Amino acid sequence: MTTTPQTGGTSALDDLRAAYHEQLTRLAAERDAARRQARRAQAQADVARSDLASLKSRVAELLNAAARHLPDLPPVEGPDAAELPAAREARALPAASRGPAPEPPAEAGGKAEDRPARAA
Image 1 (cartoon, rainbow, N blue to C red):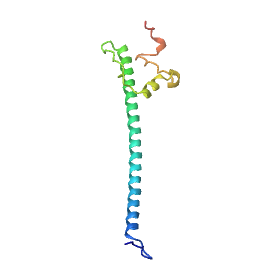
Image 2 (spheres, one colour):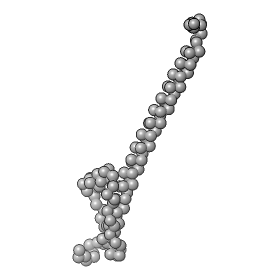
Image 3 (cartoon, rainbow, N blue to C red):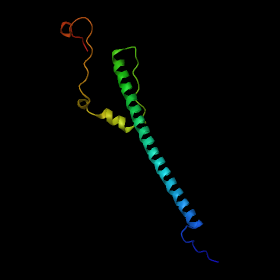
Image 4 (cartoon, one colour):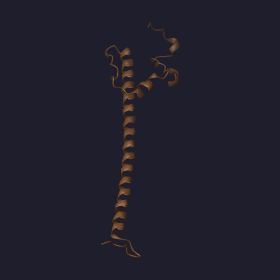
C-alpha cells in the first residue's frame, strides 16, 4: 500500500522533516553562539593572565628598586618561570620606548644645586 500526498496540504512526514530541520538549524545557531562566547572568554582570560604576569613583574622590579635604597628590605626574587611571553615582551622593550626614566625625588631642604653630591 502506498500513500499519496494530499493535495493542497503537507503530509505528516513533510511536517516532521520541517520541524527536524528547524530544530537542527536552531541547535547549530546555539552551538555557534556558544563557540563564539567561549572564544571571547578564552581571549579575555589570556589578556588577564598576561596583565597579571606583567603586574607581577613590575611589582618585583619596584620592590627590587626599593630594596636598593632601603637596606632593611630584602631583594625580591624574579617572576615565576611560567611567565607569559607577552609580559616578557613588554619588559623587553628598549627603555627609550617606555619614556624617560623618572628622576629621583629631591630631598627636602633647598635646591639640588645647593646640596653636596653624594658618593655612590
